[in-house]
Length: 409
Ligand code: C5P
Image 1 (tube, rainbow, N blue to C red):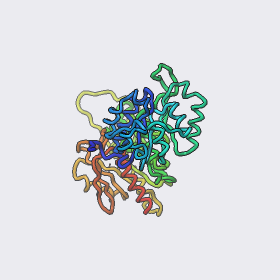
Image 2 (cartoon, protein in one colour; image 1 turned 90 degrees about the horizontal axis):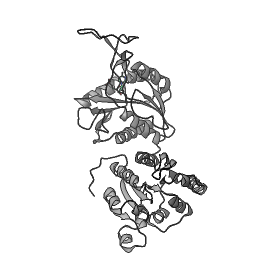
Image 3 (cartoon, protein in one colour; image 1 turned 45 degrees about the vertical axis):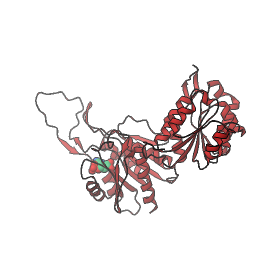
Image 4 (cartoon, protein in one colour; image 1 turned 90 degrees about the vertical axis):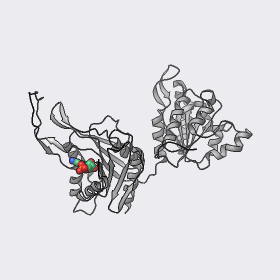
């Protein structure tokens, strides 16, 4: 079926999305939609109870394919049997995973479309539990969860704590759709950066004139944070040196918060020693006021002069530090340009002594500051690759593919 989704980080991945029967099934529909949007090929199965909360037609419309709801039903088995469903699957996601379903999975029971499908699955299984607080706390449910975890192929995301549909407060809410997606990405990621340490800069810097005013730029940090999360998923130890952004700290990543270019340089030099790669995605302010007033500067009538000086170039400083050494990290720079993108990127590659420059035309639609997508050129000594317009997550994956290749060479 033709899809309008982006070429995403889950392109080519086959996901079986299985619905259990709980009110959170409506929220699971959104999670399924996210998988489709990320480019995954999604096939769906539902328990009979699940079909009472959302209709198979809804799930079919979202997944773009038939939905398995019955076993031993000749018309369904003929076109889309439970064994076909998981053949070649990379991951089974069960959301919401009810107490009943978790128990059945643990006991190895079949009998409905979901459990029978699972019995035939060999791939990892991600369960997103959702149930009443007391049911989640029940010792048998907890034993079932522990027993499944111990197998190694069964993984859990959530449940979250909060107000539940039944009015109780506590653990039992389905994990947010984005968290389910994130957990799946983690399980599907290659572990090709295991044992590696990456230092990444992200976000803007602020260069203060006085305590309440600064020079900066609209960088949101999304590109650098996406690289950090993707690198962690691929097994790297990641230190993220970040300017002021609104994004939450990614879990499993060491985050060092800074404000100015000078602080970013200082923090970077402190952590970069021994790193396997340094990825400078920060939009460092190029100039700073020569004088930073200790108190708020009073406004004056008429025009005023502001004397600026250059900030330190963090990437060039790191590169220069290693110029005479044999062992040096792979050095990756970013270039935001509005014209002659490749020429400027190549000039940067050479001038700063880099292995790779990720260049984008920030004036192009869907690229640059504040968007979720980017269209980039990967510029290296050996040539230039033009990547399609894709999510920043997917761009991060492509950049890390190149880092892995550079580390191996
Ligand atoms: O020279 P330009 O600012 O275009 O270079 C961009 C690249 O250099 C980015 O990777 C950016 O993170 C890095 N950079 C830096 N310190 C600066 C300016 C840029 O690390 N002061």
